[in-house]
Image 1 (cartoon, helix red, strand yellow):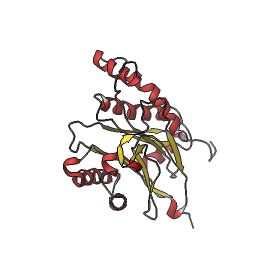
Image 2 (tube, rainbow, N blue to C red):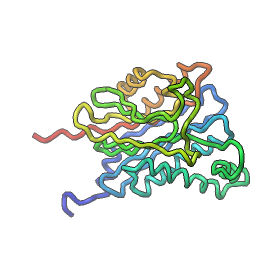
Image 3 (cartoon, rainbow, N blue to C red):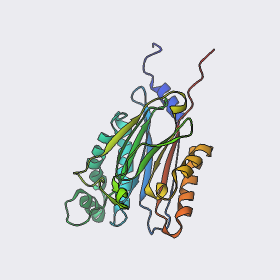
Image 4 (cartoon, one colour):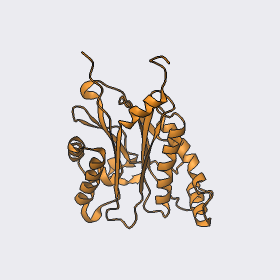
Length: 268
């Protein structure tokens, strides 16, 4: 086999160097309606790690189930077919596939997923969804719908927000979403952070629900991502800090942190 041939064993080895950590806290809410998941795609070179976070719409019963189904479905689809450069399309496929998750449930579960599909009148169980695909050489693609965010910590410790909130935050109403997974007429967006060298190279990627990024300043988020020794500790510190900062008004808080390995030093 030539040195440049695709080797799934090597791809899997490189992906194991990518460290993923996640944490969720219920905050001051009666229910936990956030969800997250991650998986690997090793069927191409480069392979990638996919991470997802979803925030169920709290005013509608059943949104927690839909959020969990969305995060798991997005990662399952991304692990089966190559969606490295098309996370927005992955979200569209997730929107269509979520109803299948309730097909073999009891009657109440089937009705919940039918409500999500809009087969019944009234408010639908709904969710936001943000998905990121990350290669070992720090090539990052992000897709999102709603106000769950994706951010990247660079090698110079600058924090860059990659996503743009789909809400009425600029009018002082961040709780009002303008796009969500269950709204078929609303489209996801996507963006790309390439494999920059040196200080512009991605060091860590953060997916967060609004319970984290609405409660914490960018300065605090950047500091935690910079000093935390592991992805798991970074996720735990972020969620704990967010709930503490919000106090009695704390929302569900979820953080998924991905640490990307440093590039190998060139041989002298």
